[in-house]
Every structure is written in structure tokens, then in C-alpha cells.
Length: 616
Image 1 (cartoon, helix red, strand yellow):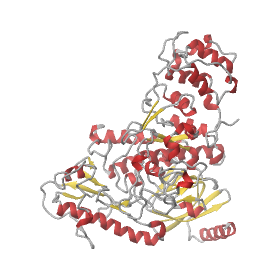
Image 2 (cartoon, helix red, strand yellow):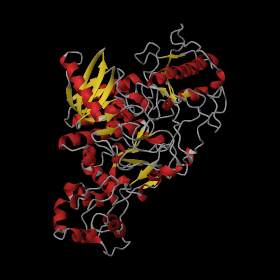
Image 3 (cartoon, rainbow, N blue to C red):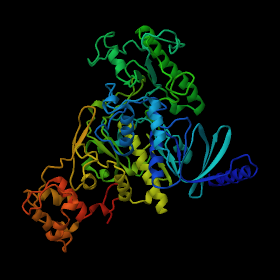
């Protein structure tokens, strides 16, 4: 393989010299895919001053957020982390506030895909970032430590030499091309330890969806936006679209408005992404060639066309027409919504066990992105898919470990989409838009840190990447009651991610939670137990269950830093934004303890490995 690469590199050199191939461009970070993850990678890495290039097959940024039309944000409403929070603020500014985005009942944040694309392009209009739109990669080769990639745009071939390559494609397309090991489809119970997983592994992926955006034209006449009846149209495929067995929607007529309002967007538009007798579609693409998949996707699009025909004709909503939302001749999105793809085998493997009981493991210590959505899979259109009771998997909000972004055996290559190292079951929550934006931002921080430090991504300090993300208002831990505006936010995030003070997880409906309780009082015992993994000098230190006072706090600190004193602390008290009074007998709360521990002991400076174990 290496010899083959060298031969191709020589051939490319000859092609450049003869003008067949454009001269080689050199960048620090090359991102294949300008979707939610890829765009976020690019913004973060460019802001850190490294040279970044995106190769994107469509004329838009945002992928599933925009080009696929899934413009209703699932999850993380109370966790506006980093670039996701910035994107939401810009949406609110555009539409006139938070309430203007709460137009449909599936989400708190709904928007027109074209507006989302415009905002992401504005955010990406920054130095050090170049984007090749309507471009497709052709070859990917390893050139020593670097990557040599050719792509085609406007009928011309171009070549890029990059130090780090990012797979931000919707389905992990690059993984087999670069030789990375990956998982695909449902994992076996014996491989993950997940009770809900099937006994045997398979290659079944979730249903995909060709979304449609409709617009209410009121009483206007004409046929513009009415779809034709597609070939093989069968109304039985859609006849229960307005009825749900769980009782939410009982009447096949009166509750059709409720079905449509599910994804109602601003400006009287409707996102049609409906799983129940709607436009989900199973496509066994793992068994297809790229060309076969392209052809079969036309059938998936026709299936959505059939659903729109059903809405307009069988249900009588002829006022709802295909909106001119996308730069396509048929008004459909440029790409389908792919819920699942190949998942890299990374430095760590995140399973449902880690999400259900995070403190039974230490992966949370390496957290770089957060999510709160329940595990949600779409398999209704595939009768061969094993039955899995996803509702039975109770998880609190969670954090994603950095090792899930780094392949176990390929250097200078990072994943940044739905292709991270998680189980098939966990993918049912990590695939959602705000989580992928967070994954991308973390990948961007990791890639830029790698370039600036002249290290491979696997060698970069985890704590350094986490600190970089904290500077960008990223949540490392999903503490619902610790807001970015809190002056103690960074300290509570750091102390939370060390596990010195732990959160309280609650599986809750469609927005799971983890609470930090900043005003909750801390006991001596809780504090000492939290510090022990980092400071062996506290071993055998007697600790009571009584409240941790300033006096007892100083006594504990002096076991680690003998020279420290209450007098020294008093000099810094006010400048550290501590709300509690400076009183020796005051029992300290979790916010105060976090700030003091972060400032005085700096446990976050103690490195951890990919599994979250303290490095001696």
C-alpha cells in the first residue's frame, strides 16, 4: 500500500508539471464535509490561527442542519454550549427572540434551512479558512506524516497537502479509505455489554429521511408547489400518519394539524420529517456501491414525494406547497438525513453503560462535548431490524470523551460527525445536531492544538484541549444549573470534570439532566474523597460528614500545600468572585469550593489518559 501511494504521488507530480492538475496547496487542517461537525471544526480551528480548508459537496454549510433540511434542533436547549450557543443566538437575533423560534412542538429552536446556511456562512467568514463548495474529493493518500488529497470542482482537479485530515462526512466515508477500523450497524451484546443490544451483530442502520419543506400559501391559486403522484404510489404507506397508538394523536383527521405542526417553522413553513407512517425510509446502503446508493436514494426521495402527495391530496392540504427553500430544481434538500454511518474504532469506546452510570467509569474526566437527548432510533421501515426497547434505556445527560474522536491506529486523522467511537445504541443520541456541533468544535480545538504544538492529536494534552474549549464557553460537563454567565462557570466545570465534586444525573423525558447544585453545602468527607485520586498526601486523613468550613478547608489544603494560609486566601477572596462571606466557620457550598480548589490546588493541571485515569 505504501509503495502504491508513492507511485501515485510521483504521478501527481508529473500531472502538476504538465498543467493537468492544479498546483498543490498546503494547509494545516483539511476537512472533508462541511456539515454540522465539519463547519464547527473549521470555525474553532481557524479561530485558533491555523490554516483550514473545507471540501463540501453542496453549495451550503451545515449538512443535516441545513442541506438535509432537519432544521428543528433536538436537545441541549438548556446547554447552549460553544458554537451551538452562538448559532442559536444568531438565529434568535435574526427572527426576533427565543419565542420566535419555538414554532413547532418538537423543538424549542426551529428555523428555515436557508437562514441556517446563511448564518453558518457568516460565522465561517473568518481568516485562515477556505471553503471549496460544490467540490468532491477523488483520492486520499498518506504522504509521510501528511495527507495528499485531490478533489474536483468546476471540472478541474486540485490537490491539497494537509497535516491533519478530518472525516466530517455524514456517514464516515473516509474510514475505509484511510484504513481505519470501524463498526457498522448493530453491535452484539457480547461486544458492548449493553443488555438491550442484539445477541448477534448485523449491518442494519437506522432509517434515513428525505425531508421536505412546505409553505402555506393560503388561498392562492395555481399548481406551483403541488407534487405529482410518484410511480408506485401507495396511500396505505401513509394512512396512519395522523394517528399514534400511544394516544397522542387519536383521530385520523382532526389530529393531522398536530402532525404537521410537529415541525412548523417560522414564516409559515413546515419541516416534513415524520417517522410515524411518514417519510422515513430504510436503505441498506452498507451493501451497496456508491453508484448504487445514489440510484436508490432517488427511491427514498420518491417515497417522500408520495407522502407530500398524500398530505396535499388525500388529507386536503393543498395550501401547503413545496417551498423554494433549497437551490434545487425539484425543491427537495440537497442530501438526505442520514442518522447513522460507519463509526471509528477509537482510543475509547462509549457505550450505554457509560451513559447510564458515568461515575462508575472515568471517561467523563475526558469530556469535550455534552448531550441530553434520550436514545432514539428509527427502524420502523425495516421489518428485519431486531426489536430493541430504546425507551427502557434510562440515561441522564452525558459527556463525550475525547478518545472517541481519535482512531486507535491512524495518526493525524480525526473524526467529527456521527462517525465517532460509540456503540450503535449510543449513536441514537450522539447523532443529534447540537452534539455534533460540539464534537466538531472539540475536533477543531484538538486539531489546532496538535498543529501549534507540533504533536500528533493522540499526544496532545487532554487538559489543554479542555481548557481551550472552556475559553470558548463550551460545556465539558452537562450541568443544567451552571450557566455560562456564572463567574464561577469555568471553575465548576473543571472541578466537575475532575470528579472532585460530582453531578447528580436524572433521566427526564426528552431532555435528560445533570445537576451540580452550586449552593449545596459540601461535607469534609465528600471533599476529601473527591481529592484523593489527585493528591495521595490526603490518604488516611480523617474526614467527618459535617460541613466543610473555611477552617477545615485550609487544614486539608495545608496537607497538600503546607505553606498556604488563611491570610493568603483572604487577600484573594473578593477578586475570585466568591459570594459567601469570608468567615472561618461558614460551611462552604459547591460553587465556593470549586473556585477555591481550582485557584489554590489547580487539580486540572494534573493530566489524565484517554480512559480518565490520573497519569502519575
